Image (cartoon, rainbow, N blue to C red; front, top):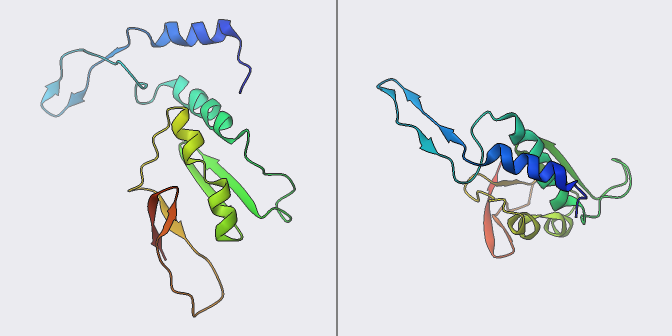
Length: 139
């Protein structure tokens, strides 16, 4: 696991405790409400905490080598993660669902897609199943 100073953990908890927000819409503002879990949208801490959580989820993932020799790679930007693998078996090995869920991540299976890129023309593209969850194939 990540070695984060207890002092920093307390600081983040203090910052997030008793968080409140209002939503502004065309009809006006809502009443003030408490935020009991998660972060406020646009919160500066969101990116840092997400990156720490992602790092913790990926620590045990085998990604040795460089871009030309790896059979699997990860690319991440903001809250999007792209998993690139040369073979379907490698894709399933690196898929971080179980690690992520243990840390509190929720992977939206409706938004998660699978794309197969190949020069072969006789391949039948079909949805992929990883750890009991099905992911839609896209062209």
